[in-house]
Image (spheres, rainbow, N blue to C red):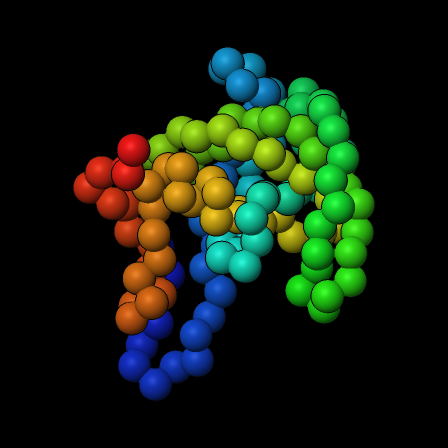
Length: 128
């Protein structure tokens, strides 16, 4: 994925992700998602999730990076990236939000971030 050179500031990692309703729906939301190790769940613009057929199933209060709290609707989605398929909560974010992939999806897919190289790596096995 993204590799930084020695001496460069740590950058952001973006990867192609596809989210859709579980079970193989034809419609999906495909975009470059920011890998956000500070986020538990993933988020994408709500209108794009609805267009892909994902519907809200609940609401949850989330603590934002600045310490404030915000309530968002969430849905359940099939999440595909790096040749892996997993499922999880995806938050219906505001319009214009940059989509991001949280640690729950990364861990469920068996993907880690190598802090030395700032690259994503697939683990040889997922802990049971």
